[in-house]
Structure formats: structure tokens, C-alpha cells
Image (tube, rainbow, N blue to C red; front, side, top):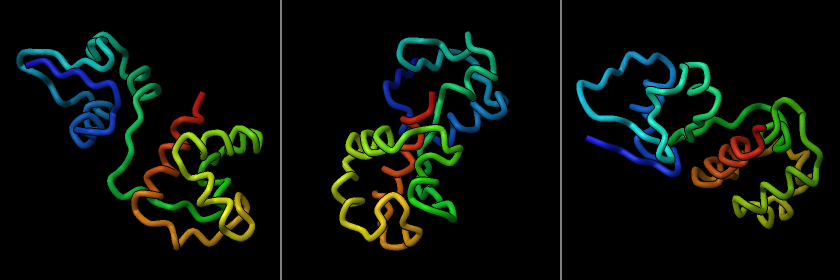
Length: 124
């Protein structure tokens, strides 16, 4: 069979297993992401360039800023820009301390997924 994905949001369990261990072997067919056969990528490249959004992403202890940029690599304007892309800018501006808020318990599952997606989108 042939599988093409333009976003790696579905089939994450199988692809995550494949990306981490390469132990999933296809007897026939190919797995393609954006028309690229992933068998042609090194395991290191696959791990670096394919990101998965967990069904129930964890919230890291710390600030909202830390959850989006755990390595503290980006300026505020870049974080705000990605929050706008994932449709969370308005939500974040409505909470006390905004990016510096440590109370993220009110974020629902979908918002936590969008925070995780924001983190993925910021990666170089």
C-alpha cells in the first residue's frame, strides 16, 4: 500500500514507533510524507524532522512560555506569532500574566494540543 501524509497528525502511534525504532518493517509498499519515502531517510533525520502531536499532550511544569519554548530560544514576538497561528493568542491574552502564567490547568485537551503544536512549529 501507499500512504501519503501532508501533516503528521494521524497514525501517530505507528509512525511514532517507526520513527523511534525503525522496527516496523513493511513487507511491501512505501510510507511517504510529503511525497518522500521515509525509508530513504536516516533514522536520525526521521527523528529530527517528523514530529507528533500526542492525543493527550502533557503540560510541562513552569510557565506557558516554557511549554511553548522549553529551550528559551525564541523572542516573545515569535511566540506570540506562533500562538496566533494555532489560534491561541486571544486565549492567552485573556489569562493573568499571559506568557508568564504558571496556571495552565484551565487549558482543555484541544488547547493543550495546540500548545504542543505551537512548540513543534517553533522548532528550527
